[in-house]
Amino acid sequence: MSFLWEDKIRVVEPYTPGEQPQKNNVIKLNTNENPYGPSDEIKKIINNLSADDFRKYPDPTSESLVSELAAFHNVDKSRVFVGVGSDDVLAVSFLTFFNSDKPILFADITYSFYPVWADLFKVPYKVCKLDDDFRIKTEDYLTDNGGVIIANPNAPTGIYFDKSEIIKILEYNKSSIVIIDEAYIDFAEDGSSCIDLIDRYDNLLITRTFSKSRSLAGLRIGYAIGNEALIKYMNDVKYSFNSYTMNYAALTLGSAVIKDNDYFENVISKIKATRERFSQELQDRGFKVLPSSTNFVFACHEKYSAEEIFNAAKKKQIYFRFFKQSRIDNFLRITIGKDEEMDEVIRFLDSYIK
Ligand code: PMP
Image 1 (cartoon, helix red, strand yellow):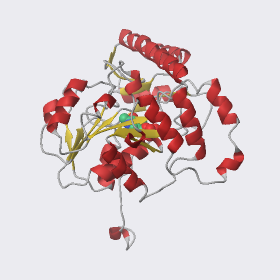
Image 2 (spheres, rainbow, N blue to C red):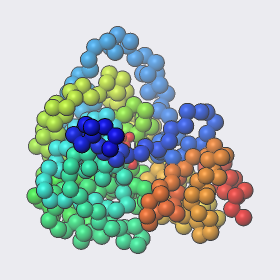
Image 3 (cartoon, helix red, strand yellow):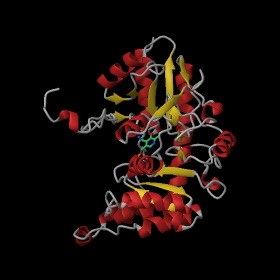
Image 4 (tube, rainbow, N blue to C red):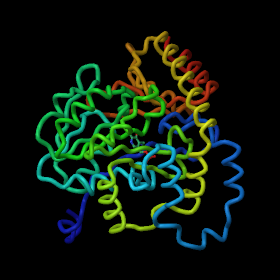
């Protein structure tokens, strides 16, 4: 220890976000952003933002955005919580709902922020090993616990976990909060979301983001939907921490984006079509590709190491994500970009993999 005060402070092992290279002309497929920008309609609203409105504090209740989201999901406004990206929403939910001596449960391979929040808030946790095909074993979650969090579809695997299995987990865990992180659900099949289960389960919280399917990672908007008692407890924590979380631009654009549904559906279908084509191209070149319900694929090559391909691609200004973590350290996570970007990736692979 180098300072006398270090044993009195909070020392944590932080989450490592994906690299954000600050140069142009890169093919950036490392943080699951949407390659298609927001619609022309939204661009017009961006250009017309009022400078004077930045002078004032924003609405602490985020009424306009909450109302649009409630209408979109056909739920009451009291069932919607908004935050600065789903990272903020998830952090507030960990702080609010995971406060027991019993361990919370999550997968060994999932969003790597979960153990970081658990450590930060001193929440005990137990990791449940995915099976050899990287699938969740339902029975692991049918045990006494302090809460459950499942990313569905999972990241970085991209695999969707069947809703009927989530129902079994919800039925067993009526005295714990079960959070389903649906950051990527818009890229899965229609009807695969668990939002419609919130009427049946008062212990279910769904989190969502504008960063992937809604093309607004830079604006930082996330939200949660759940029983009104859950949302009230989250707001109590939020108002004990930072009241003005959503800035004026986020509130204005977020509300407009929710109404922009045709554009949203169109972008999603383009990304899904590119994902299917690109997955096949990878398989044709000796990659094993996990079945993806997201806007990325998780793939490993039979001969070349992931780290080797990752480094070679980076030299050509192509950015993938690589996790030096046991069980997945031979996999690359590749975001689905535009068709022409994926063609460039294929050309790179063809020059590299002989
Ligand atoms: N959940 C999962 C599973 C994710 O992969 C991400 C993106 N890193 C998030 C939540 C957070 O996304 P955001 O804060 O941009 O909403």
